[in-house]
Image 1: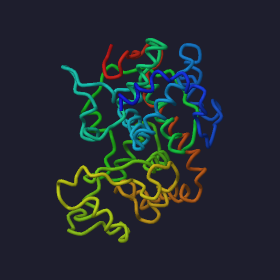
Image 2: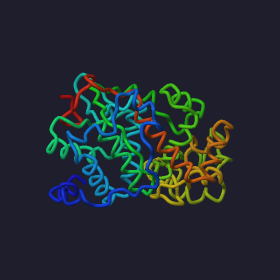
Image 3: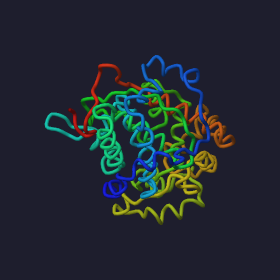
Image 4: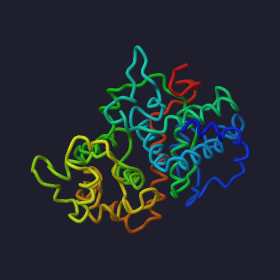
Length: 341
């Protein structure tokens, strides 16, 4: 992946004029997201200091997704796993050091988080054209938006001006990232403790319209659900044989991959919610959204109204991208995303 990226590096400027955005929605700015003003972020933060930043990000994500169609989902997940752990400060990108065990090797992230090289490539370009100016946290936030757009999803304006954290915590990542096998109430509590709400739980879960899951995250649903010796009764029986063939009942299949949305695996759309309504959600945490009245109403709405999902997803991504941010003199602008200056 890095080799592919650098092969294209010299052609970067020529891509600045490409039509980079396939926009379903272009949203109004401050009046739609008043919290952005309070947070000291600014939609035009780099207009003078790094005017080509968004083109750099767009090109790099385009090239990465062209090379590996799974990368769109990976970049979206990388951003979520950063923000949900003590805020959007790019702490997820930090490598371990002598006095710190970071987030990369926490159980929810180890051998599953991807896309670090894409962020590093964008950062290298930013440092070349705009030294010590652009934070890794802002790059990660922009890359997640571009990943959604490249997969056919909505466009939204990204407020900028985050700074990078100087520490990370493996324990915090272990404790704070929602698990696909924990009760829905636990997941809701994790979201609401950050300032998100039940609606955000449902709409951000819709990011599972793209990407894959490793078999160990859902295999107990296929063979021995909650110690019953039988499959999960809520899983549509016609869906079961194909999943069991992808994830046979042996340890060697644990890291096999299954699509989170088999209907339109690489397309960002609302089919995720149709799958839930049809009892073909892959993860327990996804299918559980149909069983709780607080969340089921949103599942049903997004299944019927794709444009509602697109607009609400964009709004929730801005809200999530605003969690626990560092601005002004707090944090730093890392020169390399994996290292504190």
